[in-house]
Length: 156
Length: 290
Image 1: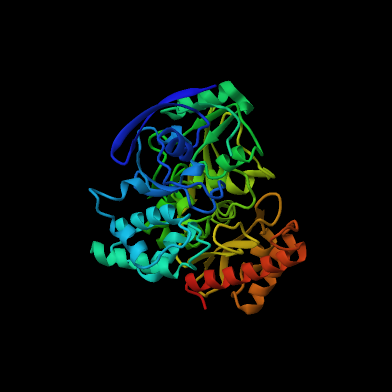
Image 2: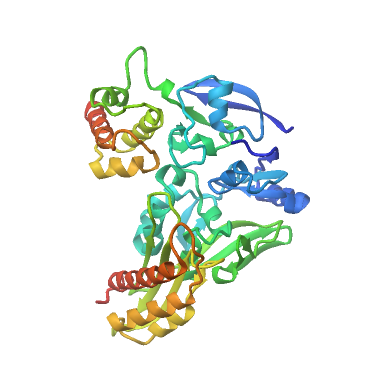
C-alpha cells in the first residue's frame, strides 16, 4: 500500500497526515480531519455537495486525491464563521431561506464565497452560472440566488 | 467509491515524468486535472498500477501568441482558458466551447491537455483542435515530436501517443484576417456530453467567398470526425444559405454516432447537420461575411 506524508493547510491550520495514494480529498477532510461539514452527495463529480476551495478555487473534493492537495490551502464550510460571527454568505442563506434540507448547502456556500471573492457585484446570471455545478433538489435555486445577492450587498 | 490501490508519483520535471512512464509502460497513466481519470478509477472502469501526476511540473500552464502560433501549455486549466482575453480575441471556436465543458467546478481542475489527449470522442476540444489545424507537441524518451491534430486520434480512447509520451503543448496557427470560427453544442443539461456538436473554422477572401474551411464533429463516432468533404464543398463559394446547407448535409453524412440516452443514431445525425449549419452561419458572421 503506497503511503504518503502530506501537509495541507485547512482553514488556516497546517494539517499533516500519512495517507494512502488513493485517498480522496473529501475522505481526508471528513474522516482524517473529522470535518464533516463537507458532504458527499453523488460521489461522481456531478452534484457539488463536496465543494471546497482549493487554493481559492471551488472544486469537487470527491474527484481530487488528497495527495494532489499537498502544500495547498483548503477552505471548508467550517472555516466560514469567524469569531462567532457568520460569514455574509451563511447569513444570506439563513435570511433568504436559501436551503430546505441543507444537504447541498455547504458546497453551495463555498462556490458562492469564491464567486464573491472574484466578483463583488455579480448579476443574477453570473450567480446562476457560478452555481451551475452545484445541484439543489429543494429550493428551485431562486432563494439561493437571493441569498448570494444578500451576501454580495453585505460584503460591498 | 474508492479507487483500486496505485502508486502515486509526482515528478518535478518533464524528464522525470518521461522516465517514470518509460519504466512503467502501460501500467502507468498520466494524471493531469483528473476530471476524467479519477471517475474512471473510482467507478473501477479502469485501473493503473502507477499514476504520474504532472500537476506540479513547472512551465506547462500558459497561453501565449508567439511566432505565428497560439501556444497553450498542456496543464492549462479550462477556467484559465475561459478567462483568457487572447482566446476570446482570435479563437472564438475555442472561446465558445470552454463554458460548455462540464461545469464551472470541473473546469477549475480540468485541463486542455487532458481533454485533448484522453481520446474520449465525447470531449469537446479534439474537434476544435482539428478545425483549427492545431499541432500537438509531445515529449517522450526519444525526444520531442509534433503530431497534427487530425492524425492524433486512432480509435476509441486510442491516440498516437506512445506509452512513454506526454502531450506538452498545443500549437494553433494564428488565423489570418477575415477568419471566423464557432462551436455549437447540443446537450441535455449542464455537465452533459454532446448529443451532437460542431467545430468550424473558415477564412473568407476579399470578395467574401470561402478561401479555406475546416469542419469537425464531437461525439459522432469512435474518434472526433473531420468532415473534409463538407469543408471542401465550401471553398471558392460565397457561403450563402444553400452552400451552408449542403456543407452541413455532407458533414452529417460523415458522422457515425451510436444510439444512447442522448438519442438515436438518426436523431444525432440530424442534430449534427443542424449544429454544423448553425456553426457555419456564426463563423461566417464572425469572419465579416454576411
